[in-house]
Length: 240
Image 1 (cartoon, rainbow, N blue to C red):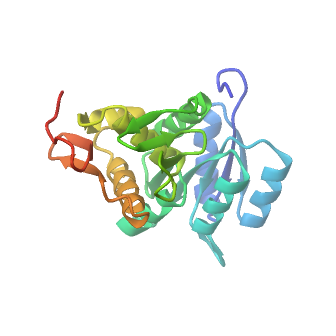
Image 2: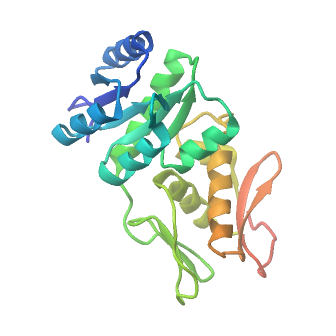
């Protein structure tokens, strides 16, 4: 997808008519083709009939769970998902990102920041996944084609990550034992360094590793700097 040649199709899922009109106005100003729907049922129909590039998804959709809808989009479409919601609780943010959303924006928001996040998410998706093979730390191999981490010896169940989580883990594993700054991780995510969603993604990566029994591959925080991936039992010295 090249957004400079072919307009991107964005679907706004929002049951507040005033908010929907504002989002449509901002997005059309950027040259996007915008469709507004107010329910999951209509969203599904639009996605069946069109190639959708991005969905801006409100979580409060009456009887339908917006998080379940985000998970369904991840499974059934190639669309990127940005959750745009009034829910600003940290746990909601963690759950939304872990459901597969590419970003999470709380209302009220600055229109220019929202558009910058839209551009960043579309830019990441336009790059497509890098080739298979990717990075290795000790016996662990991250394969980006299916976004899983597995042991070469087969002793552990493969751990599956969302695309955003896999991108962050890839950068860490490409620099084993070295500190990767928050600025570098945010740059990979095309977000400002003060954005805290990188920390949420790292927390979710660590949780998935722990729940899958991967207890010898640690992501260590480096206070005030960033993160470092470390295989327990290896030297903790930072070679950078």
